[in-house]
Length: 75
Image (cartoon, rainbow, N blue to C red; front, side, top):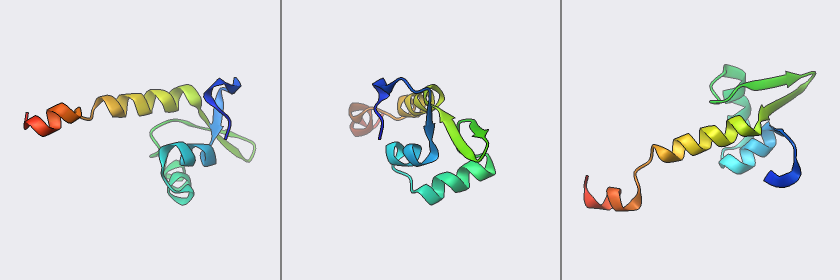
């Protein structure tokens, strides 16, 4: 899989599947229903995602989770 520093602005649904840990079937199904969480760009037959949008979504999802210290302290 290409690295973040490869200069591409997009990623395929297959690449998203690999970085998110979701199965390809799940990713394609969510994309088809418009529930992937990021806009899907359709270029001909190719389905692509903006790397920036994916990173922003994953960063915001991580920010919503409590830290280990908060989770163990009961607060």
